[in-house]
Image (cartoon, rainbow, N blue to C red):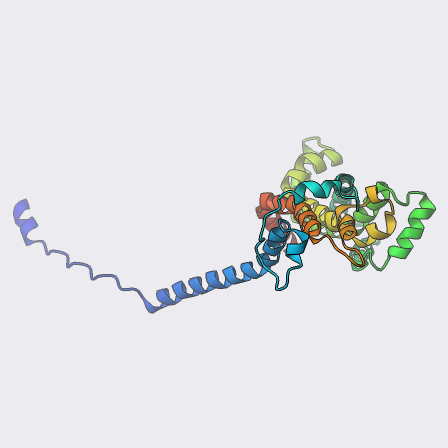
Length: 300
């Protein structure tokens, strides 16, 4: 009986070969087109950096050759060694100055923006809207247009031509963005989290540092990177406030290699490469956190 049933069972017809739909071919074509367009755009943005990199290995005469050449006729890696002892500016001190100003300005911004953003996101107080409006208005003002006023203010405080002056200036001009981005992150955390922690006996500071900060860590990373990069690249205020060569950052020291009648372009390129390496490495390490923080903090 079983054998007969097996014999009488109708056999399944073979499946027809799967044909590619026209829509699938179009999707593949779009993907290839996007890849090609992305490569072209990336090449356009990367090309100036490649020219700068190759120029840092050229001699001055090779750079001024007409017509110009993209690749060095003879390689000069010693440019990266001799630039540290040039008479134009003390580059080792300039690098230290850049690091100190950027690190301490970032630390100061983080110290102020975290409690300020937490308080504005969690509590309602008179003038809250005005305060947030004034915070964002400061983002419209740049050190370039306030250079004269900043110089007079630092002279009145007696801290002109010091690292402290630039730390305060960089922190002040990057604090607005940090407060706003952190405000959005704190506002996105449910208040029930705070209430549950307070029921367990946690105080307000404990709730902030042990409960809230781990939840808003992407926002903290975003604020740190934004402030650090902005402080690292700051030029206008440093040029006016810092008059001593050893106190100036790399962004100002770079101009010392360009004179009225001559320019050491090989050192300009080499110093530029050294100046952008820390920022590039930093972005590579935290790219995912930074993009996620900017996206999440902008949706509230």
